[in-house]
Image (cartoon, rainbow, N blue to C red; front, top):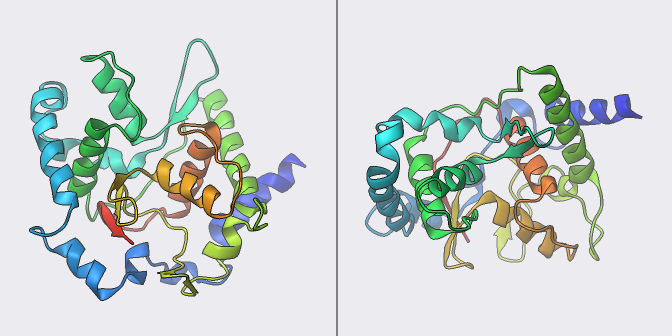
Length: 254
């Protein structure tokens, strides 16, 4: 059974379902001309507010340890990462988790993926990482690598499992129905190339964690709590699936 799951994971990552891997496109390719224009217009793009705030926070909170923001831009395309923990076997963390960990060293409040400061820094780093190629590296430690693979296997199961009252799986929409109109949106392939996003229906910026939870809600399934292992596993799976693609920076969605 274990070998079957690993095969399933590998197959989804390497085998085309309805779109050839040689012609992979980011979600931006499925936006309306109006949304694309908005994303390119610095004067009107709402994400500019988060970018500016992120640069201010970087200067006051991060630069002393990490230097210029550009020097840390690669971190965007390498997360999620495996964080070892002496009290347990470790866990996956994403970029927003790491930002929260760093901020807590100066301010011991409870930071979440949707905290305004965390999102501002994530958006600004994402903007600095535009054009970089996505590459997620497996842990070098054998035990950590085995746990990392278990998370990949878990995500492969989640991605192909029918869920919710609508009885839909991720692959049914994001591999088999790409380009089809769903209400007022066009279904895009499940490649993670530009987060956080400013979603017009949210009227604010949001992390990939939030977007994944919105998908659960959309199929009327039980929504996992923010930061859950399922969500981190899915983020790893989607980032690994997107390897080699260029990062778009923070994006706008309807």
